[in-house]
Amino acid sequence: MNSTFDLHKTIAFVLNAIIIGLIIYFVFITNSDKSPILFMVFYPSLTILNLIISITLGVLRMKQAKIYKQIVFGEILLFIPLVLLISEI
Image (cartoon, rainbow, N blue to C red; front, side):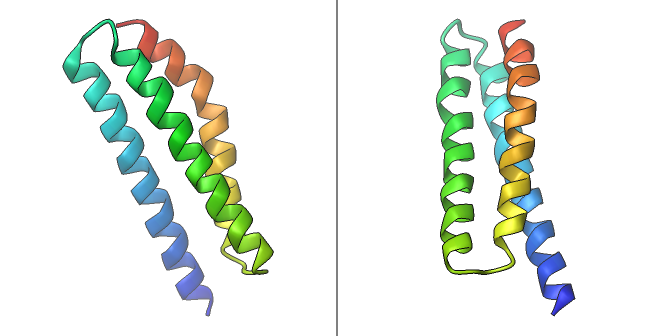
């Protein structure tokens, strides 16, 4: 049981990291003055999606809700540093 929880946690963290990496890569590769706007739309959308998943799993009383709460917390903590990084373009 614990190994499936760890597998779910690993997949969720890796998938979110890949999506965030793709968002940042797309912003840097386009090198447009409107690229930060794309970041400001898609990154909060990903955070809201993870929050919805966390709330849904919490209502269903599943242990996996903790995984998505951690992801949302991490994304909120990284938001300001990433905005500063993106705005340096």
